[in-house]
Length: 76
Image (tube, rainbow, N blue to C red):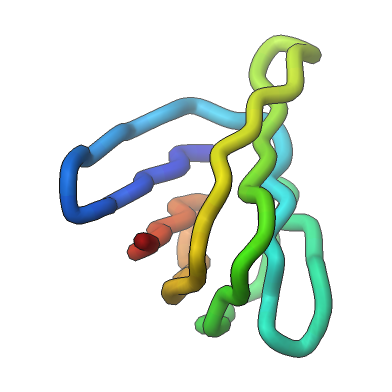
């Protein structure tokens, strides 16, 4: 899957096996083949796994869109 993280300072594109998001209705995980979804994000930790290694990035909120194995995050 492709994870795109857009912040006011940077744009990152990462290949990920799994992505964990701090959704407004509760945290959730996105895996390959996930149904399309749009969710607001709350302050928390964005986590993703690449080659079995977990990475994290704090977010202060934002939006997430999942479609066709592309996860686009607009965050502060």
